[in-house]
Image (cartoon, rainbow, N blue to C red):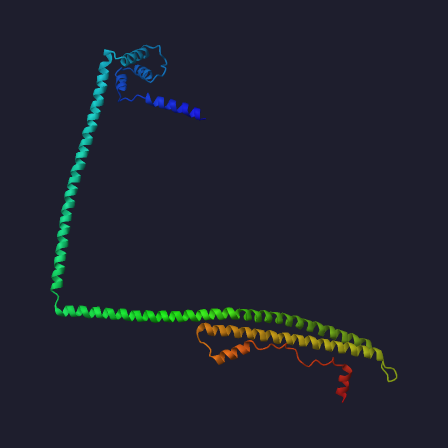
Length: 339
């Protein structure tokens, strides 16, 4: 690939070097031959290109004239001199134009330098005049004007002092607020765990309360159905003094007793979890209220903090009723009613 590129580059370079323009000496000579075919043959000879067709009269004439021109034939001197003359005229024309443009640019540059020097001179004169007027105005100030200037300067200094005092007070207030925010943040971090604990506990107890509430309804429905079934088995048979269905009566009493005891236990668990959920929610609200008071800067004295902390961290009761007697027997209840 590299060798092909070198060959192509060499061919292109060689061909470029053999290019003949109409303004060159060979170009003027070729154009002076007259007929187009003779010119083409001469140019082809100069650039070493085969002439086709090469057997015509004009082609042979162009090739012969070009060959004679390269060898310095006196008969070809006129076209050569004409070519040099045309080239010299072109160069002279270009040089005249360039010289004219250069002279014009030099003239403009000289004029610009002169204008700049004049502007600098005027500017210096104006600055000197302004300085002289300023010095004259300062010298011409009266005692009253000087007193007014001193008073204005004194007022400015007092104003600067007032602004400094205001800035110091604002800085002090900002530092106090930042300290309060930092303290609140620290206490919030310290109380974040209790708030989460009471919120989680409230949610857990509320779930248990909902579960036991549903269980109470289901147990009530099941107990009612069981009592209905027991009475259905007992009442259809005739009851007499000498024939009592003691077994069925005992069975019904046991079913009723167990149903009442189960309903009572489920109700106690429901109210216990409901009570504990409400208590946990109240404790979480107390902690959040305490944090809000600290954030707003209301503050609490030692006694108020003591009461708040005692209310938040008092021992939590289970919520279950302490009276845990044996299951109520229906027979005993009927005897007590009879009394």
